[in-house]
Image 1: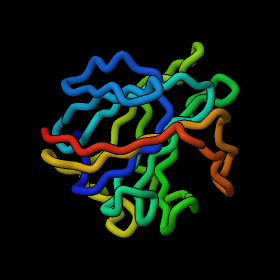
Image 2: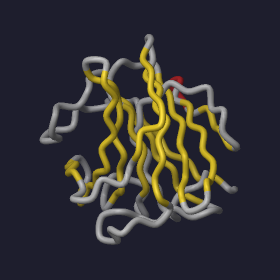
Image 3: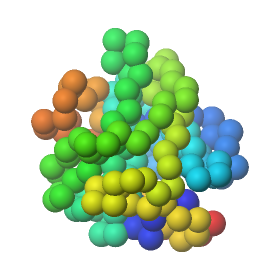
Image 4: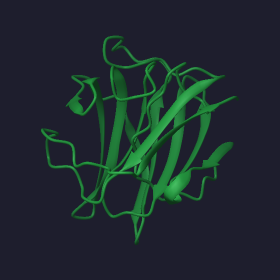
Length: 165
């Protein structure tokens, strides 16, 4: 996978993974990615009408993790650039470095986003590298509220892997 040497992916997604690389995770979670100059494009999908998330962390957990939480609420897509200083506590970044490229919901949630490989926020965003990366993913059954105060728990809808690209 194409993420930092430690990547956390918390994402609920519905994707056909039409990008250069793709992986089918457990529980129906699919992720695709490709590099586009100084950016990376992700295409994700999962069997939910709630949120999906991806992220990057040296600890293979949400501790000190760079997160992207996405979904559709009332027919409108959202994608939040967030971080977690400790497991379970998600906060929005001051700088939102994620661009939504496409989205859909029809029994699954599908999101296509773009993010710089290296953002201007080194304290809350981890650099994404080409090569070996830890990759974590998750999804929840409900959309996130307007502001993240409590994360809707993903129960067992989560996992991680290391990808060699």
